[in-house]
Image (tube, rainbow over all chains, first blue to last red; front, top):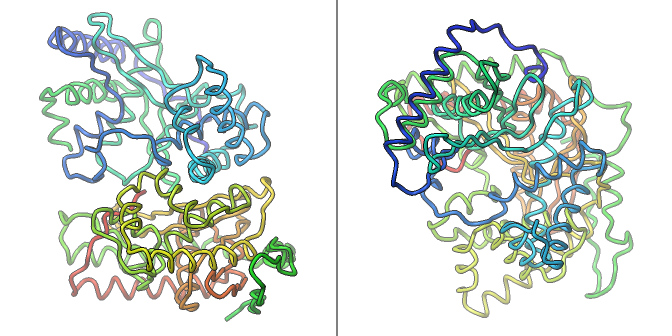
Length: 263
Length: 297
């Protein structure tokens, strides 16, 4: 997957600075408008839900529950982290290790134990096998897709980045990426190909840009569908920042007219 | 039909006794491993040629349906008339269980996953239901639990037979083989307006660019053998379109009879299935098609 290793494209600093200021201004306005409302976190899920009006995924409106599908990414990235760190030799071994960790944390009353760990621990051995099998498939596909030795420095696996609005403690944005290298952020995609995907990836670019100091430009964001092998890139351009800010506006119930018409 | 080992593994075994081969699936494993030097060679341009062929046919369908028609999701059920598409039940949640055969297939596939992941099955029916619950398929579980007691007992006994055969047939792959189950494939054609999709029951091996290096195993509960084999060829075509190379070897396991077969993937398999799909798409330009909402990718 060369897209993760290629150097970034040159960006005109003044255009970038202008787009970043405009995005910050829009987000500040959104935060103020929501003052007094409940805490709102904008993630790729909210962007996807706001933009996909064709009910492409019938599960969007279902309340969240842990299942083999909703658990696979959390367990899968943990497994790939173990593999990348040399602590496991295969995805199967890595996932087993992670599942055992869940049980151990719950049994010992560790503060590291999450809802997911408690759910995994509550399952029968057959239920855990089903959860593990789904995570193994997810992890194997990611592990086999990359040449891990080609990275100049060890990539970061499965760390989501948050940006908290300085104007309101109620607004936070999440940039989800599964592998982060010096030049790029890889997002593993699932579900059908959809018109919202560029906006979903633009949110990652926006979060990275807001977290960087000054006018530094983040790496490109690469979306990858393991089901088809297709890639989609969001280069760090001023237009990507604009798209990301409009996606947040739309997710918060705003107009974002250009984005709505594009969808 | 190029089957390396079509002879049945199932032998009459008294309940509780261990069959002669120790239930390791050693024969299947040995045949999958085979002679690595004899792996078939594939034209590097094969994937591009097959895709061009299918793209042409897909654009004909798009022209006939109109640019703004919703995407057409096509799986083995539509294209091959396969009854063995075990994902169909999950995708049709709320529509009620289909036939007993589909139900059995779904349960048997959950046991295959468990066997690959843990190497053992304790109580086939209870384990399969626990796996469905973990998958969020509570409606399916409730439906099974609402089956009258006599029918449910019969289903459990039948499933136990399949589980025993699976225990004998499924190789215990070392983790280094990278075994993964339910590997979904979805290939968009005509700019995503037509999507061919399917799911490998089990894939082993490390993908290597330009080399056919994967083995795929398919589970069929009770055939028909030819249809199940054709589904594996279909999935091989999708893998060729996804990664540029097909799997190099396929195994088909029939849990009802204990039969199995192993064969190499050959170009003629891929061309035959591509030809079938192109012809199907050609007919779809004049006949109404049923969209499938269970597809991803």
